[in-house]
Length: 99
Image (tube, rainbow, N blue to C red; front, side):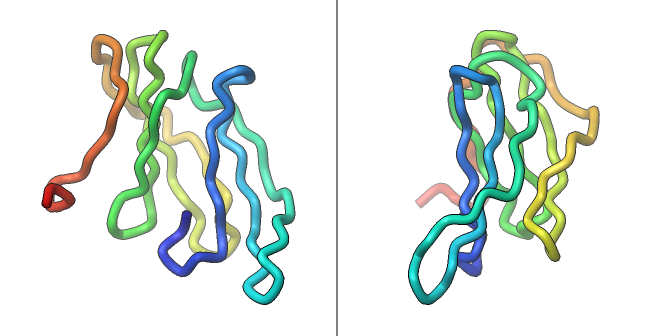
């Protein structure tokens, strides 16, 4: 979820996509905004950077972490075409998030 609680991000492993919904702050109703390819196969986990500007997606079966930018105004994500090859990535944690 976005830091301000207005956008919900999900991954769909069956379709290998990231799905974005707006959250109505008064009712909690979800409104579909976007469905985009996750850049690999089987998006096991993703994390949003503390800045809220980046999303990293761990695509387990394609052995790659993909980087997406996040538009602060719309909540939409966009591929950056940057990433990191890594055997079976299944979790992403940003430095400083370890408690």
